[in-house]
Image 1 (tube, helix red, strand yellow):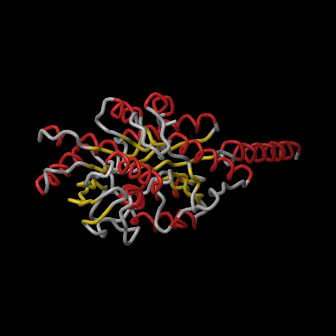
Image 2 (image 1 turned 135 degrees about the horizontal axis):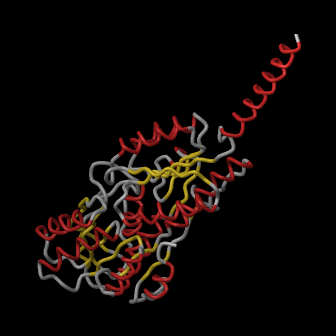
Length: 349
């Protein structure tokens, strides 16, 4: 009897310790987050990943990185979302590659994950819980206003080097339509590229839009797109590009064709991009802050998981605006800007 009583006590103690051990080792209090970028090769997204890693370390967050194989690869992003759900992550940070990821995002939110878009607001905006991003329309508008002033009334012969021509992504149309608005060129559907009048007047004179070509946001895409535009009209004197890799490719095509004295404007403001402005490869660019987006996103999910505190959008907007600044060494009257020295201090902070 005494042995049975001892065994019973020991068994009870063992069960109690086992239960306590399960509670301690199950990581029930850990906060795990997935960052899913458009790709892992564009310097913008590489910088965003690095910023997220540092923020995760500072906030005691487990971070999983995933990315599309290339810009526009929705399926790989969908799989990464599915993986985050299966892993039991608390939240997802995503730069969506297109509307094809929307249903997977809904599934994640239905499963209790908090989903934040970075850089690229989805369409519709309420597909995610909140977006931390550049005001992409404003970014385009700044380089458009700058271009109009620099032309000083001369006719504008314009090449528009966009992201896609086979899918609709907010970052694509917002920058393009913002640029045209900044130039003073009337737009039609603000969520559609290429439906504006091909000729008319901008704020300083007459304009002609030669082309809307996709670049996939890549240097080789920018070069190919520019080559196509030049076959239509070699007299192009204004080149708008979605991002700086596309701008570098466009400039290579212009150089190969022996064409100079062209205004090339872009969006990104990375450290390499600021140097390209300083070197005259790009004349002006709108600077974004991807590290800030990543830091805010990681901290927001940590705060939600630990005390339920949720972030708020910027007043008057349906997203949290992480800021934008025009970088150029050729300032234009009436257009606020910073020079490349300041741009280099701030690049991708």
